[in-house]
Length: 115
Image (cartoon, rainbow, N blue to C red; front, side):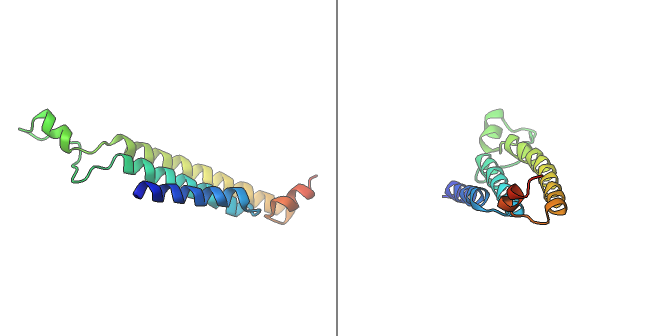
């Protein structure tokens, strides 16, 4: 069920990216899609009643593996969040520069005003 919600969130971002004419709304749609993928990756590594993957004294390796949570998706998501923040910042900076040059955020208007 939760995976379906990730898919719905991704489709909302995709709809916003493909149908909106405002550049800022397109960037927001891309950000929503990014968050949906990040949430999906975190949910892949989730294990109910899981513990941190830290070896305890006296615990056998099989017992430890059965209870531990996979830390790799969490590390990938942290990296993805940092990279996504940089990409979003660059996209918003480009939006600001386009607004300064053309005076609008509308893509069809910017295409018409080429030059």
